[in-house]
Image (cartoon, rainbow, N blue to C red; front, side, top):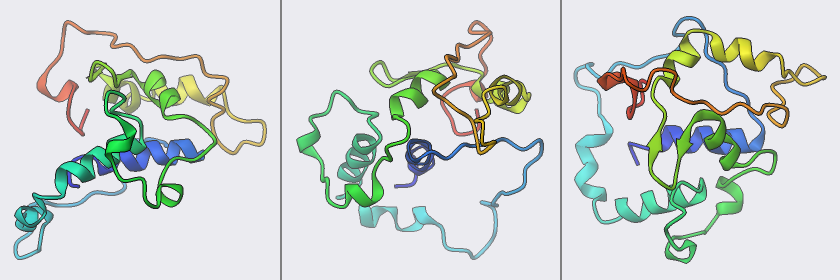
Length: 160
């Protein structure tokens, strides 16, 4: 899987209880334009046969394909690599404007995060032990504040 692993890791981490924060500036990145470095897509043809089933499994584990019969994908080792019991994926989707049934996301989510608005709005729900956000107290549901002003980078890609 090349497209989808970030969401899978994020949703599984959220379900285990991890909180994610957005620093003011990039602290970690990678370059795609390095020369003579092996990249995933060089061998992507080797995995054409298993890619659809892998994606079905990934989406099934994080409950992003509710229309798919769960018996149609491999559940092996799901107890090791699946969801945690602290929060549900549905809470993640509701909070951050992801509609898994209609396959739609709210635009401008990256602006909500990058601007510091999310940090300001969510830190008032810091747990009493100061060890993260108490999402049980958050009744927030992200809705695009400017749906009539979408650009290519505002929705549907990993950059916002």
